[in-house]
Length: 161
Image (cartoon, rainbow, N blue to C red; front, side):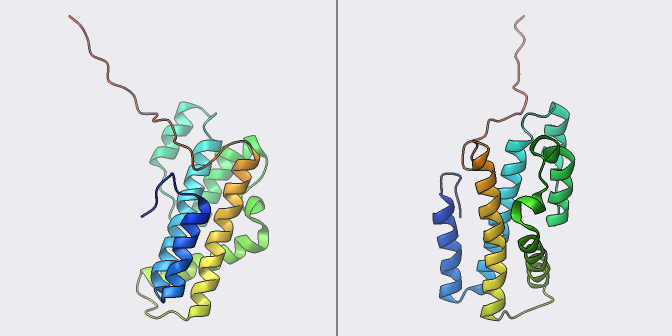
């Protein structure tokens, strides 16, 4: 659905178009995906100066909520950039994000079947605003989450006999 080459503006315009079309659940889910994608990319870029062990740990890391991203950021990124992810996003928007995550969970896991347009808009806004702040923060450090990352997998070597 999205490509690394998509700009944040294009990506978010696509997501918001689902709100306008009445596909509220899809807009909520895609905004959550946008946040998680942007956050994982930011962590991968900002922790890239770390040891190979940290990179391997990150590659295996599967957070299941914003608090999981926050823990990894605190343990591996915060040492270098001196700001927690909640400080990057802003404390009030971070709390909005936590509420958005709860709403997304209810929707994805079937606890809530219908969505009021105001709830969907508030949830999408919380996710996309957090994504914007994380992307802007990474850019302020001279990097981009939209650049192609190098593949850190070990290349095979062939023995010549």
